[in-house]
Amino acid sequence: MDFILKNENSIYYECGFSCDNVIFLRLGSEAFFITDSRYTTEAKESIKDAEVIDGGHDLAKSAREILRKNRVKKLLYDPLDWSVEDFYRLTSKLNCYFKKERNFSQKKRIIKSDKEIELLREASTLGSKGFDKFANYLQDGGVGQSEKRLFFKAIELLTNSGELNVSFNPIVAINKNAAKPHALPSENILKKGDLLLFDAGVKYKRYCSDRTRMTEINTKSHFGIKQNYKDKKRQKVYDTVLKAKDRALKVAKEGVKAKDIDKVAREVIDKAGYGKYFIHSTGHGVGLDIHELPIISKRDETVLKENMVFTIEPGIYLPGEFGVRIEDMVVIKNGKGEIL
Figure (cartoon, rainbow, N blue to C red):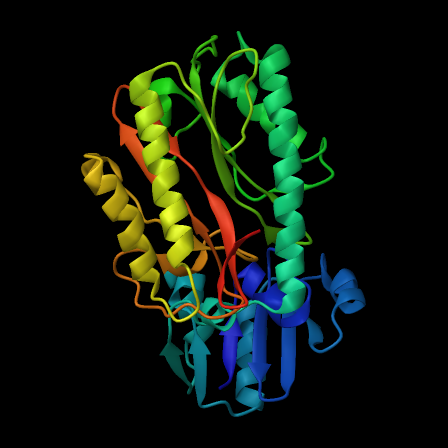
């Protein structure tokens, strides 16, 4: 079916190039990349299978003219792409039925190609190296720094001082701030003995990585999966989350529903007495977007298939105390879950 796109990553998937001011139309075998003069030269150099059109200051007008010229009567669109104003300007006085379907581009992208898997694997490898660099920094010079300072240092180390882009703003959270799943960096100062949560990723050729690890600040701080803490409560919570992640990975196989992975992780945490402190889904798809389909939640009926990529990231968050989350990216390969 003919469709229209406005989301940058969705457009990149279709034609290998995108920018922050574009409308993309696919009409049968023809495609149109409508942008303004700031991007037309690079677009023409980068795009092979779409006509690049300079839409000036009114891209919607150019899109309407193309739709009228081609006598398009029905067009698929994603309502999440459009503001009310932009959609009104696009559809005004146009004799065309716009069929609404949320996330239709992500649905197309839910099964990755082998090439995409390799890009995601490389992004994960580069992200892991960034974690190692940050762990070394924490051990050598992190004590006495605020979360805000650590946040900016993490970006520097993850990106090789700007060589890469981060997938999202990293989460650097100490002790009770880690009890907030998406904690913002604060003025909290890192001290010896503190528990630190680090959630971060980088992009490689636009494809994202996503990982979360914990460490306790001492002379041997590291982001390895095996952690030993002096505090028994910290250790129990960490071991529970790790067990939940490992159990979830074991059931992540082709033919299994996404909600069944969530169920297994949640059962482990429930049994340990922390069920009410696991306050988010077990995971999400990753690709060009940091959050894609499938959603590893108790409501997602998606049946896992070969080359689907998603995170497994159970967590326990104790308000006013600390939080623990452990996260890996997983691909369904040869019928079973494999950590990227």
